[in-house]
Amino acid sequence: MKYIRFYKDEKICYGILEGDTITEVDNDYIEYEVEKLPITCGIDEVDILPPTEPKQVIAIGLNYEAHAKETGKEIPEEPMMFMASPSAVIGASERITLPSLDHRIDYEAELVLVIGKEAKNLTRENALEYVFGYTCGNDVSDRHLQKKDGQFTRAKSFAGFKPLGPVIETELNADEAPIKLSLNGVVKQESNTNDLIHDIKQLLVKVTEVMTLYPGDVIYTGTPSGVGPLSPGDVVEVEIEGIGKLTTRVER
Image (cartoon, helix red, strand yellow):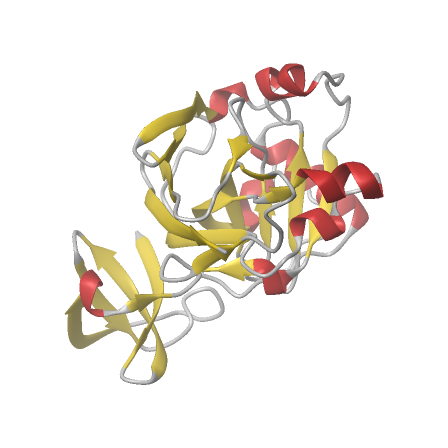
């Protein structure tokens, strides 16, 4: 099932996407059981919002071996987790804004998992019971600030640095999902989640050892090799088979 959150008729709405048609539902699909309403619209008729409003945005660094190698860093023995501000999250109808043209600011295609219920101290056996679904993400990163600060919060938290969406897919095999990123129509990243160093279950176990996750929170699970810089006017497409395509534009 593909769930979508959108803006129409001056209000925030929730729906199910089938093809290019949205059927509205009566409530927030993450927090509540929902029923379909007799209201439909085309996806091109609405502004697409992030499919969730997370209280917490957790991200994992160096979680594909090839990406670790291209950065010249050792493969982490445990998931390398960090936080980004929820205010950085945008939807497909919004723009990535580059705060400084003097800094290298990179794209990073990522599979993002969405938490479905309060989660703490999960095990590999029960971890997936706490996942509502999966979506596409772009972990936009200011490399100048990342290097200067020696940690990631500021470099990853500018408004617009966490594109998310366009839908949450609830029926994805997240261990075997092809993922790619295209920049202005040219493929720059292409891999599969079967190359993750730490898989989805392990990420959930290790993150919830540290913190409690709540419905709607998200975990960016890491990016494949091929990261590179963004420029004003770029069109970035993150595509994950089974979910869809997240398209965002870049502006100054």
